[in-house]
Image (cartoon, rainbow, N blue to C red):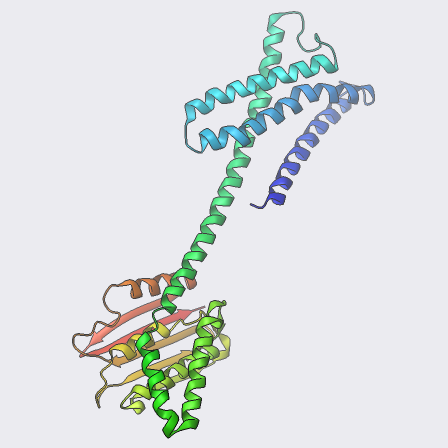
Length: 344
C-alpha cells in the first residue's frame, strides 16, 4: 500500500474515533448529565487521559511493534503478555494525564476499588485500540502481500513470455540469412523484400511483442511474414497453407500467442514431397479457433511430450485466459495436430 493511502487510513481511523467521543458527549448533554459549555472543556480533558492517550499508545504499540514482531510469527503467548503490559503502561500514562489536566483525585476516588475500576477501564480502552491496531496492520500487510503476489505473478508471466520468445530457432535465422544472400545475386528485388520481412519480424519480437494485447490482424501479419521466410528454405512451399476466416477485428490477443506451435511445426514436419503444414484461424465475436496440423517423422516428439516449452505455454494460457481456453495435442499416423480454442 502506498504511503499516502496508509496515512489516510490513520487519519480516517482517528477522525472516526474522535467523532465517537463527541457523539458520546452529545448524548450526555441531551440527557442532562453534563452542561454544553463547561462540560465540553471538562469532557475534552477527561477523554484526553481516559481514551485518547491510552488509545494512541495501545494502537501504535500494536501496529508498529507487537503485530510485526509477534503476531505475524504467531508467538501468541509473548504477544498476550506484552499486549497486557503495553495496555497497563498506556493506562498509567492516561491517568497521569488526567491528574495533570484536572486533579489527581478526579478519577481515583476515596477507595482502592475506585482505583482498580479506573485503572481497569482505561486499560480496557488501550487494549481495544491495540486489537484494532493489529486489525488495521493485518489489513495493510495483507494488501501489500496481495499486491506483491500480483507483481510477482506479472513478472513471472513476463519472464515466461521472454523464454517463449527466445525459443525462436537460431537455425531459422542462420538459414534465412543464407538464403537471402543467395537471392541477392539472382533475384535482388525478392531478396530485398525478404530482408525487409526479416527486419520487421525482429522489430516485432524486440518491441511490439513486449506490449500488451494486440489486434489479431497484426499477429496474423507477423505469422504470414514468418511463414514467408520459412518458404525460402522449404522444398515444397505450396504445401504450407495458412487460412484465416471470420471477423479478425473483434479480437485482441497476447503477442506471439500461436508462434510456439507454428515454430515447432516447421521444426518437426517432414520435408519430402508428401510433407505439409496447415494452419487455420477462425474468429467470431465469442470464440477464437486455432489449429496447426503437420506431418512429422516417427521419432519426432513435437509438443506432445512434457517439457519446458509445453509447460510455459500452458502457464501463459492459464494466466492470460483463465477458464476461457482449451488446448489439445493429438498425433495419429505421423500427423501432429494442435487445437487451441479461446472464448470471451
